[in-house]
Length: 417
Image (cartoon, rainbow, N blue to C red; front, side, top):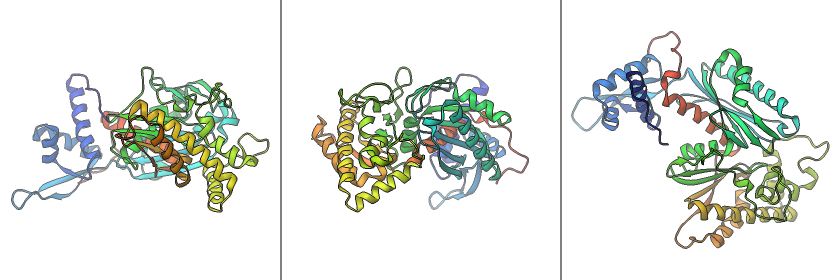
């Protein structure tokens, strides 16, 4: 992703150069100092000085020798390291909380998802439960030898990223929640910055970085949850819009006479293709919101539907076919607007892709104006329901790489050579 230029000044210049080196190492398994100098345009002496600082901070390590051609001096290679520097990504959604904690090099330290009725628990209780999950994840990461340098939280709704405030999350019944400040207070002595962003945006970044369509500069990601959101990558950059609220594709009105949505409007796309809509049609006895119905992990509901489809359950087959057609209709609107190369479907959409996609792709071909010449297609994510928390952890890593000075002095110990 592209970055804005850093302010002028010696300290700012050094931070920018450190960041430049770290970005190259993030994108490659290992590189020599000479190669880094070549691709960044920095002087070799500058690269050597920067590398000495990064080694001292234990953010990189030397990993061997890089041989170039049959003659010439071997080059000593370095790789991104930072096993003591943690990045914690989290997601709170209608029926679960997920965490994904890594170190700077991407080693997974903690990953879990717990069923939780965030919709029915109320705003204050849900935020407290999220804070508890954050504390538990921080302790797990500390036991693995890493202290989180930052925490990012994915939320299904409109987010003021600058303030870390959830402006509106209709399916959680949240309005103007200063989530970053509240979590910072709950975590107290940790002192790590907290960021908040939309779940679909973070999922799209995860897909762009390491998903099934990684590196595709024009892609749309669709969350397959109770609510449906979209993350839009255009020209390799995340589209945020004038106020940062782009991607609320679940609230496209596709049926003016349809059911009421959690946002209060009628016939929104997510009332046709959200997980709650599918469960209500395929397994009405287990529909969301029924009195006494226990909250279960969304994977469990989806697994039940998949078993029914495999066994030839006709009611489930009709429900999935209908959702697939609506998925294709909404996807065609996005394809006509943004001309993406792929529409990546996540969450439950991906779990049921073999049944959904034939119907969705057929609608896409039929309704996209440029279909004869523009080959847009649906593809199923391989990141599952963990895409948003993974993207949140990536967001923290990107913040660290953008400003390595935010990392505290390393613990005592020799540089890793």
